[in-house]
Image (cartoon, rainbow, N blue to C red; front, side):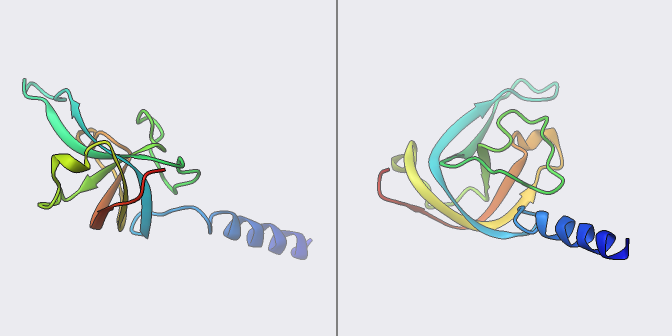
Length: 124
């Protein structure tokens, strides 16, 4: 009986080992788009965000809020890089940085990437 419990704990531990977690350093690829979202409050202004539409949807993120539409396909890039220009819009990019989970609806995507590097890659 003990060995069964130990085995189940072992399997449980390693089943989440491949899941991304808040604070992980990662590299993601996809198409960079500039999306406009409606304001969530009484404000009439819309909100613009740099979003990477991922080549491959995320399969597993620990503690993710799946109520966000496209939670595993769209990632918001922060901070908006000063080097970003309109010539990167709708281009294939690679972004590296620290993964963080949205903590308010004002983030508009369930996952944010605190990007330290963003570069155009070859077309797919």
